[in-house]
Image (cartoon, rainbow, N blue to C red):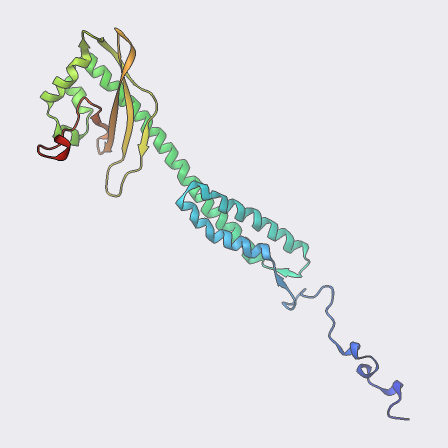
Length: 246
């Protein structure tokens, strides 16, 4: 039989294409060959790590939100790919980081909001107590509502002298109450310092329909919230010879 008989030729000689490796439609199932990493999974992982940026500001909460959405999309795409795509670990990492970091920031903000609300209630109560003490001319009680730093700066005699006109005066009449306009700015405590706040106190008099406003500065220390200064009543004068005193 001739050596070049097509019937005796090896399969590759009959058709060169039959000698090539052919990829199955299910390539990658049970193997890592020919399996692409899902692009959305990579993006989700990047967004997950970028969620740390939410610590810089609330506007950046959009980053973990996007990470959760893209991570969910990546998992759905990988599941639909029937084994031809990988990246499930990256997608889950992006989801977990986005949920964890974003949730942590939202939780911290909720705690801070509750703390600020409690601080505002205490300041409103403090303002009301000041009015009650002035009405009853309980100057010791009123003086105790001010911060230790204030009491070091202003002695009780000067304190009583400055606040006595708020009890009763010919122009406005008698004090009926003190209140807040509810615009209270509670500030974060500086490192190693006391929390501060600012709010307008409204002094109500029986002869004057319009309350008299005074800007109050507040400080929170071991004693709780105390008034640290009161508008123009206890204005801090600049030292003699300074530029502000000229």
